[in-house]
Image (cartoon, rainbow, N blue to C red):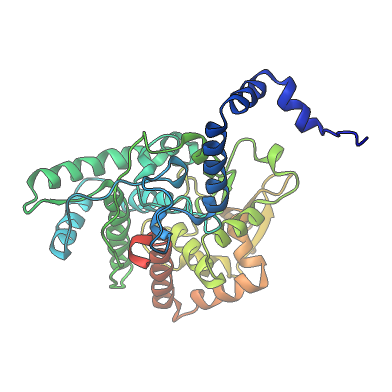
Length: 374
């Protein structure tokens, strides 16, 4: 006679009162079990495919988006055109929000994207919804979003022909407009690409529990470390998590270097701290981050016992000129990253850097625009 064997996980289905209630329901209702299993199987095999906009083929397994597919309502309005974009840029820059805050907000919306399972990104405008709006790393974006809402309401209330601009589009457009101004202030004329068509989703269509897992423990792009980082990291350094994030954004080494240098030039730290802001012209798109990083005039010295922050001191006078984190100095200490930084720091590197930064910026802003990629 063969003995039946059960694992602890099997026994839990009998002993745990909540699990047992579900098992008894399925035992007495085979149709309910069939439907629940089918839905679970569908989720298991499709979860990492991202929104249904990425699905190919004529077969529609499910007619309606499910919450775990991060649905965004279909637009029932005309999308803004080039003339509208020009007018909106002027309105955004006249709103009183600094270029630094506009860039920070746009990047904060887009940086949540994960190429692994195609979740996150700026599309949907979820930066303005829970849980993202409540994350400490996004605290700086709250007043910016409030100002952008006013711009949106003003445009949507006056636009002709059924045109409408979404908050998601305005968040990205604000960053693009700010970068064009910042580049011009640095003596480089450039046009930052912008593709309209992002739509806003709702709080009801946002899976708060699942989106909470997108909350960063560390984000080198914005020089952010969660308060519990040292307890959670278990020996993983901030720059290693930084590398992982760059990989999730599908960035190449030059793109990673350029994007970080530009964000530092724009003073895009999560708390407005001076770490990595190697310039006296914060908010202007210069290559100062790279010229200081690669300079032999400075000696890097630990500012704390754990070596998480550093002071850049003048070798001759001993004066502390700048402060930095590991996520700043990795671009000078790692041989591959430094090689790129040296190019951007060269006498002819400024325009090259701006061009590379704008290209990397647009790439990140467009990572979740499956509606225009398929």
